[in-house]
Length: 333
Image (cartoon, rainbow, N blue to C red):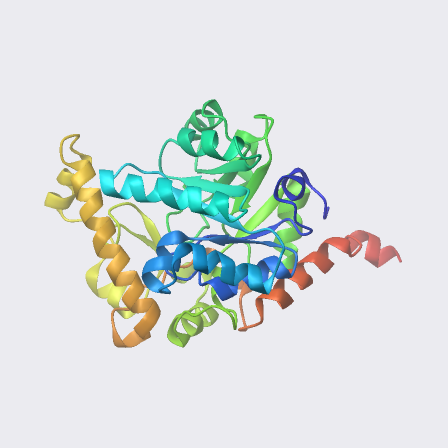
């Protein structure tokens, strides 16, 4: 179970991704996961605007810690010309610095596919259902990050099992994203047929993650039922821990916001407004904890997270779980 189509694509030992997270993907966390044999993924907005590293220098900082592969997250949603140009430049920088595994999201990945494949790399795309998966495959991606209803941040609507059933015949590696915070669930998802698992929430509660301790403690204390979907942060459903701030502000958009988010002529501008606001709010919560507004993105995998650990310890423990005999085999031994 350790070697899969994903590990061959990514050049890693363990079929485990530390998902790109705004604002939590600091270079030390990315490096620690990759050094242990998983795949850490760089989130450029986090690298540059939260952790204050020039992208190229941040990538070189990671390479000074580990020569193992890292990934790069390219959000390809069309927002405005300046953002599009910036993302294209960032992808080029990542390629120049040797990155060959890319995860795209929220738009048409075709231009990323063209750039990356010309340099011998691979591209996986975030999807929540079959129609988006088919569009991504038509654009030439090599695999799919299957974001299910148990994910943190922008979650899907289907269980990991149902999503696998829906996408399993597409002929590309599928990565389970959402709901995995413990070794038993990790092993079960790979046994189901996923080529890898992407985790975010579990890696926030690590010593290398620079998130405020209030954020980490909120994850340790939360249960799956404490994770709710709100549109108040980004304009689309986003999974967060139900803190006093979230409870006070509610989770539904008002009538004006709903109209703006749905109308063809205003939805792009409304999404851009929500995105800018969420970038600021999440950054402040990450840096200041409960002294600001407690917007803590997390998935239902909080059920399996009960301690703050080193990221490398988590990767190695999950890898060991794949090498161990299945429970039935162990009981017969």
